[in-house]
Length: 61
Image: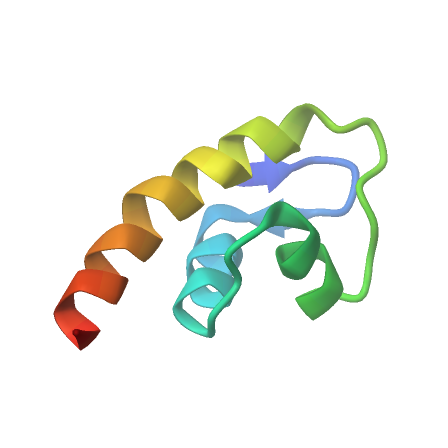
């Protein structure tokens, strides 16, 4: 499933970016060498960060 249609970023790519340390949507775009276009995906990316990054952080402590 595409999270960002403008840049062709798939859900699994967002998850991989988060596992590599992305904690803001702009960091996901940076890892994919692109920028937000229309911005519709930013909210979805932030929700994915909130749900995936928090458990990763808790297991590292």
